[in-house]
Image (cartoon, rainbow, N blue to C red; front, side, top):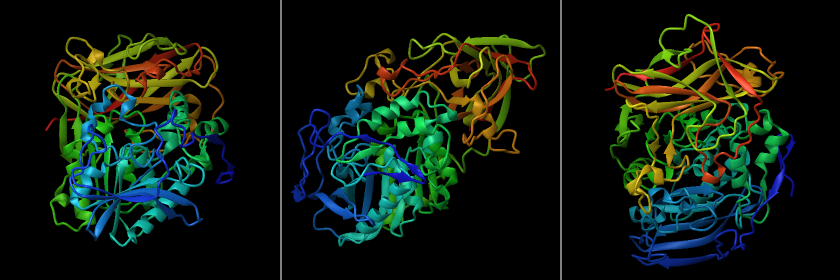
Length: 597
């Protein structure tokens, strides 16, 4: 079966058959109804259901084109007039498939006994919700497992399918006609597209950490496919179904520039008008920018943003987050008059790195209104200075150096700014760099902002404290070196041959945005170019004597999701790159400082 998006014939890749027990935890196709008694446990290791629950398995739902998708339903017995929470992804309907919290040592701080085992990966646990008179509806999206068709990689088709699913569920006899969307990561990305279709019975949605522009947020960030093409290829090859999956990495090889095919994977956020609770974090290397932009671009007037300091699944399954989400959904799907409307529109967390995070600082908007942007110039002495350098100087790095360790590699230029008073850094930063290359090439530049303590140590933030991992670890050095568990600081990347696609702005502090829809000629050898590199949002606290550090290199400087991906990177740079200091208006960064409150 072929697939076409816009005018493009889409490459397809094979998937894992649902019966392949060696490749995935299979789940037999078994349309049925089962009553789970109060206190039922899937296994002795799992959480119990607090009330008697009807489990309806492999329920067929027709789409507008006749394709059948399948879902599992969990709802309290003997109850009607229930709101439904629709959970939508390719990862299996609950407790099955190759994806799960077991993927990384430590289970992200979520003990197995915390969950029922029926939760969809990255989705809400039915055992947390049926006791509060909600129904959980776990869908296998098109092409996944036993759902018919080919698996779409987000986009218009997925949004329309979600619309059809919402409208079908709303008409079921036990439903009160109000359907919500919830979930994390892929389950959040898909929500942007479903909500943009405006299903009439969508009462609210909660995209908790999801990219909203797949090409520019993650797959080809800054115009370069390195390093995330390799990560998405692994995910693509782990899909389960009976058809094929959209071969997203092959499509990037065919179409490396942004076009109508990639436009289909940009959620039309302004069309999404249902009440929305957005979650963001700093720690994800996939979703941070898409979550913040998603919040600001939404057409919803009733919208909230919370920025948490943890790993996404650690936060998702925390009792506090579950209760917070329930307050939001109670208000919009049950008409319960609670205090949700008084919740601050923006709640931000800040990372000291060397002590516990500060959580839920209230603001009215994001970026926060109190922001004072500071311009810090790079100097030949390795400092970041409020004053521009008076002399021209140069520093260089080997751009095709292959990192040999997860952090603190060679061929990275460092510049530091020491604080004289307590300061918060909240929001978007950018680096304006003057660079040249000794050999003509595309020239990809990578930047990172780090925190240095008073003793000169550059710090890492643990997204899950060592004593909360399962089992606990003795020291941070024992924690796996993955970005899931260790956050180093906000990053930025830009391919120099994409600079002409910059979207104009009259604001000198504006975060640079690029279309990436055309490519300039290669960077000429030894010619100096101005590159304005966007750096993802951050929230870091500094005390007097601590320092902000800028790192500049030709390679990616954060940890990957899985340790086996660290240092196995597809670097396209060639030879030595030279950073010019004091040249023109001066290489500098613009950072968002806020007075502590």
